Length: 155
Image (tube, rainbow, N blue to C red; front, side, top):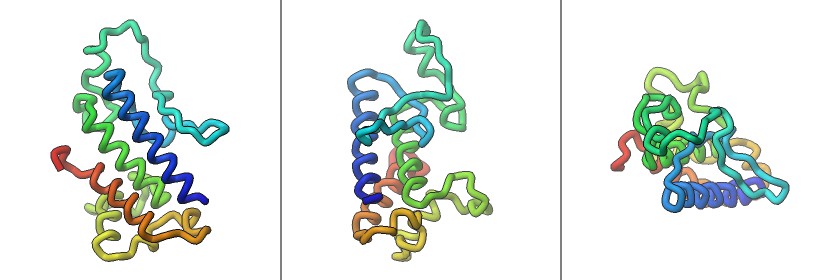
């Protein structure tokens, strides 16, 4: 059941990003705390941590921001990267700042190693493994998370 909810959540958030980017021209600070689920388990993407005055010109709203940690321009590539990290967080139950991630190890490299070494179930959040989980579903979601969180946007 948890994995099915995660799959639905993942798809709904992807649709929300598509809508925001291609129909509204808006970018968001995508992270778990900016995605709310309503009573019907429908995901709603927002930017709840940053108070913004919407009288700013659109070009000003998309300037350099600390939302992506490096002060780069807010862009669809940044949101895709954030989406990938979001997936990896949900699948592993680990945050990118977890104490295990040091000395060159990151959430992204941890997931990449699990895919390459065929030990995806060992890094999965135990809550996801409560039900009879299909490892192939976890692998597919982890692959999406890894691809979206590549270090280089062109990848």
